[in-house]
Image 1 (cartoon, one colour):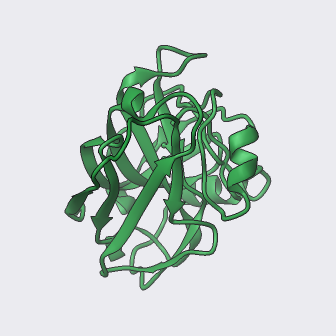
Image 2 (cartoon, one colour):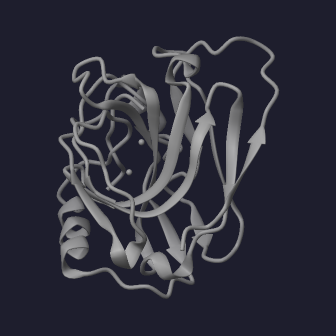
Length: 215
């Protein structure tokens, strides 16, 4: 069962000028299942603007740069240009303890500049979950294992739609995310993921325009 999410609207003092940069979670983050956690982001000053990203879907994924699985849906239709954070409660049954998880943000309207058949997406760094009671099947474990050989995802664009499903009933998607862009490298200092104009195809149960995770 997906946890409910509360969206915190943050007042915008000025128009959005850049793309989405995840400030929480970061690579050093450990979240406890069953307790409220906050996903947050900011404008990083580069294109596309947060206004262009518009309404987005926010979810939790595990996997590699090429194969990802949705483990928990968080919120749909989040206006990332007027909203700076989302509060949700991680579902303990959605997976296992470990440094496997990342947040994906998927635009409902903006398409990837290089692959317009796919939506623009942004991703957080991988973070750690504790207090989990679920298990991953062999397919998901293989995706997680493959991530060890991949460079860390920072931001990317999805080249295939991902299906929704809870962790033990997770859905799979494939992606082709290039390694980090300039903004991705800048994000590495605090473990956050930023966006650039590359492509990623998603196959199974992760988010704006270029993706490279900290694997």
